[in-house]
Length: 496
Image (cartoon, rainbow, N blue to C red; front, side, top):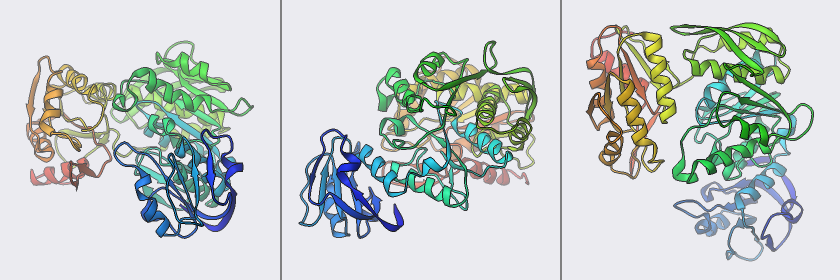
């Protein structure tokens, strides 16, 4: 990422406390940008040779230098021509966060930044909180799974939590566009890899904890520990606060980790922000929110109990950030839908079609229970599991489908480097009854499910949500569940 001007950086001053620091060459440099992709290096950049699961940036140092890198930061010693500084440090990702913050002028200090972490609900909570803050008159930037809103422009997201230099660049653009607040989805990967280091969070939200990403973290303890890092980073100063789902079994660990003000939310007694008298509707819920600021009637346009929790989290954070209650309630009600989250597909068909990102056992259960409660008819599910990801959740998702779907169609998600049929077989191992079919081709599976639907039924297309592609071992193809469903419905004779 590049800035408009050169910035003078003293490498030792910036990185002096980091483990294993060694510097060869000049320690004070005029830097034009920060890069971790050798193809994006420009003259005067610092290049970070980041270690990865399948590739190592150290193999691209020569290319980075040939493109004009003024310095290289790596975990191991690397050879470079004279005149190029080399920084060896044990954790180059964390070093990149520090140097990027300096280069972009520590932009998080000019924003009220809220980080949201948890297994499910991050995206919806982020959209709701942005709406709450903007209803209160403050322009808000967003970094999340679906898109990055940077003030004047929005771009599709590549990672839920981008690399640290990208985060710092985006925050600086938000400031330049007049944003006063930023909301960021914070993934466990991002926390573990230090991508959010040097972001000064004013607030953190914990949504829930369920099994996911165990392929990366190895255990639920490690997974939880990564997420706790966001709360440990909160400063113990007035104005900083943690908003925690008090009904989640992991809540005590998050309460203990935060050294600042704390607020719990949920539907159970004893929570600081609580929903009572919930009235579900086809397109949302109404409830009374009891809070330390008073009690307010809230109406949201997102159905399901899980979205009541998401709304409570956004309401609590918005009130803590100084939004007036009337504006906060208005902001919650202004969100009509969130891309790929219980998103309807309407083409005049006599049954309901919903696209949802649910890709964990907990997420799938919640969205299926919501579909049954909202629509009342049969629930027909089409879903798969991603390849090269947490295999432990596949039987569990199969079990949920077996328990809750009237008809399940098992198909491919993003198989990546795995055999799609092998993934499907692991999903099938969780089935303990119920009606299901195996249709490996995802388009054919969606078509088959739509063909089986009758009047009043709900077809749930789960797993990919907002994604616009399907990823195989050696290629990626365009694939958007919503658009595919629309085309198939049109072929069936239905009109929008």
